[in-house]
Length: 227
Image 1 (cartoon, rainbow, N blue to C red):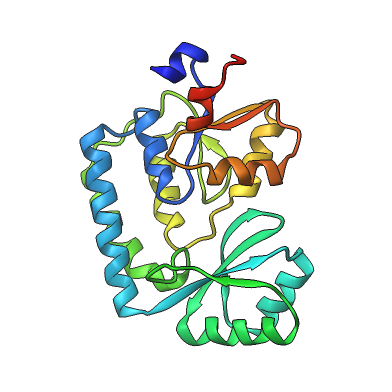
Image 2 (image 1 turned 135 degrees about the horizontal axis):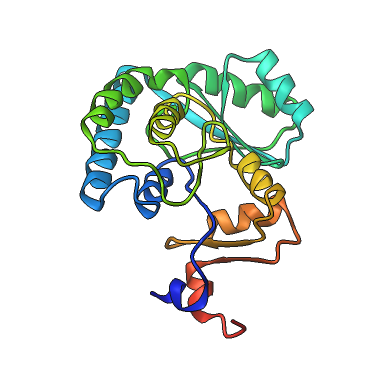
């Protein structure tokens, strides 16, 4: 209601990783109960995949594309999230992440090991992707009433079948957040509101484009007296 009081209807939605399911609910692709079922099954299957194929995730801080290319060339790790040009998240087996940390240390590349239970958005999650397909096919997906920019390809769509396919691909593919925001800007989207308890995406958006017309978290929106 606070959002509706201050703004017109949104032009599009996007959610980061798990947040994409929130975007599906907001655009009426799924009912609230169906979204909860999908979240539950997604977490259960990804936890199971993490036990079967243990892995880790590693953030590479302030590294350009050339540095990332060198890391990928010299290790067996893969990209999980492209959050901004200065924040790339990598996923891999425990061994590959440890090797990558050692390589980065030797080459003075700043890293941060993430406190997560598995190598999400990598091929180690393939069993979770396969299992989630069964759940998705049991739910009543509808065409989106407002376009969704999805993590898998960073492109807008309202087609329920494409949304389902992209949702499955997301489990084993990189989250294309930087590209998503850049595509929105290219399509004349210039106001961003992060609906959630924190401002992580709001801060990422500032790194992606420092001169957005409006870019605030929900908490900031509540306290914003300028609108």
